[in-house]
Image (cartoon, rainbow, N blue to C red; front, side):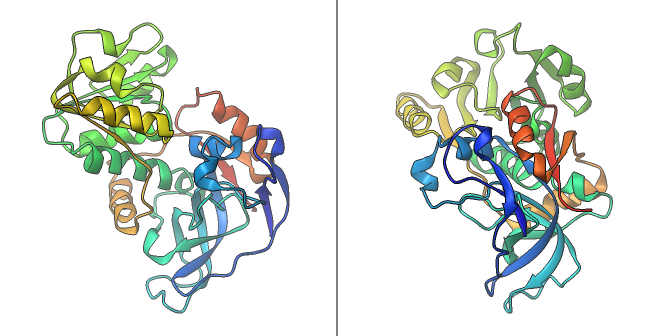
Length: 316
C-alpha cells in the first residue's frame, strides 16, 4: 500500500509518500480501505517529536488517527462488521497509522458512518468529536445549565465542542475565535463569540463552570480567575509540564484541572453518529488535500487558523 511515513522527527519536510507494508488484522481488528483521513494537531506534534517520550523511536511511523472507509477484512473475533461496510474510527496504533491506503481499527472502537455523511466528512469526525465529547462530559463533568467557554471554537475540536456543549445541556456557551470566524462560531450554536486577538477571556468579569481549551493555547494557572467555585478546566495539551503545573495549582483551590487524550470508543462514536444523522451535529471541513500532499496539509493545519477540519482524501 502507499502511505505517508517519516523516519525521523522534524518539520513537515520529513514526511514521505510511498510503499509501506499493508497491515494484517488481529482477531479483534478490522482492516479498512481508507477513503479519507484528516490532520489533527496531535499528528504534527508527534511528527515534530514534541511527545517522543510517549511515541518512542520505532521508525518508520505512519501518522494519522482518523479513519473513514470500507471494511476490507475482519478478524475472526469481530462479529459486528462485514467486508464492504462503511465505517470510521480512530486508528488502532500507538502513533497513528491512518494516513495510508489501509489502516486497522479495533472492532470495539469502530462505528458505522452515518448515511448522510460522505467519506470526506466522516474522515473529519472521530478524533475531534470524541475529544470534544469526552472532554466536556467525562473530564469536564458538564451539567445542565452550566456556563461553558470553548477556547479555539472554530478549530477541528472546538467546532464539535460548541455543538456538543449545547447538546449536553449547557446553559450558555461562549466560544473564542479570530474575528473572521466569529459568525461561524455563532452559527454552530454559541451564545457568545469572542475575538481572542482583541479580548482576553481570562481578564474580563465573566465566570464559567467549565473552560475547555480545545486549542491547547491557555493554561489552568492563567484561567483560574475566569472559573467559578468548583469550576473545571480541561486542556488538550499533553505536554508533561502542562499536566504537572495544572495538578499542582489545583491543590490550592476548589477548582480542578484535567488533560484529555481521546479514548477510541465505539459506543461514544455511535452516539456521535446518531447526533450527526439527526442533524444535531454538523461537520465543518475547511480544506481537503490528497494523501500524497500530507506535508502541505500539515503545514496548513500547523498555522493554527483553519476553520474546522483539514481532510486527506485517499484513492478514488
